Image (cartoon, rainbow, N blue to C red; front, side, top):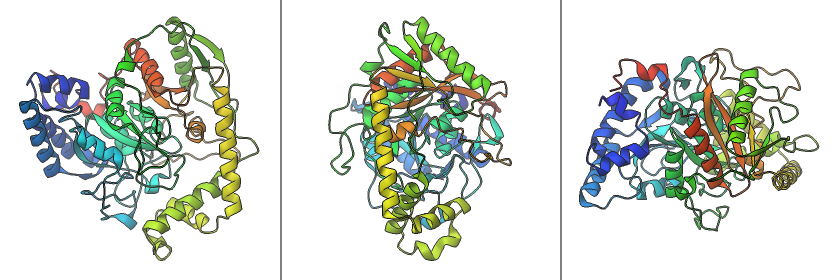
Length: 474
């Protein structure tokens, strides 16, 4: 098997081949690092690659397999988004302010991956503070989509999405405060899960402390379940993490009858324009679920009532956290990106009453969404209303026109689990996907429904053009 083909094996396949000694963690890690060295200069998916550390971890994993003491993810390569704290690699938050900053501890999700034997390859690219849906910052070149190098990889987990899609590691950990796992999963053609809020403990950039989730981005649904199995669960250091024990995500993947399962479909949420082919993918996915026994109904989830003060809410939180970890940030605005500077400038003057007003609106919106889900089990909807934009032609919205990603933030406000599930291809050649949203706490159900779609419409064997260059598949 060529190194290129090897790099496209799922985590599940790698573990099976480690178990039979057909492959070794060192062999796999070397192959993936070689691909990163070869392709990352064009994709800019990684900000930092830990060659020596990854190979050392792989050697330890190899010995654990030989001794019969292999934990859940032993020897599987994984990347960490550079908003998440690591003690031995810099956490830049996509900003020159933190270019060489080491955090004293690992985030819980990182610690749990290490405990599970995963091999950390490095830190993936992100826009400054995770603020926008494109991955551009002052640390280097923009991260681009492996399917079309002239288009954005999305954001803010753009580096993670591009890495998984291009075979630069089968597992990635992203963050999602307003769609930042689901957007790049949609654009790059991988599976991404934003878990129920608090299901995976959070430590990293805290500019959106009650909206940001951490979760897996993978080539298969089962791989995402493996990551959830390793990382979910209460952590006393995170007061917002869920105390109830997580379900068995792997056992939850077993197919079940969908008779009596009620699925809502919404093509536009009542106000968001969406590409015709994106809408057709949603219709086709719902037809598939109907053929599997689901009852379907057309219904739009609740909109946020009374307008939005989210800008003041978000900017105030972003500035507060930047100031907390960089006390001299006010004197260093010249180091920020234009969008980072604009956000922190707005945050300097955000008023407490605006913060509270926005928080109350968000809570009311979350309650309305939870009530809405009393009548349905799942929602199927677009991930984004438009395909990925060209890096030299950023999206420009007309006054009053909703952002095409407004299909995503409602479920950050409510904390419901939501996944981007690959579903065919657009006429542009880019991947398509649909969004599956479940009731609060039903991560296992979202994974199971996604796996049933995957079984009918598999996607993991699709390689983007850059991944095929010089590659032998056999």
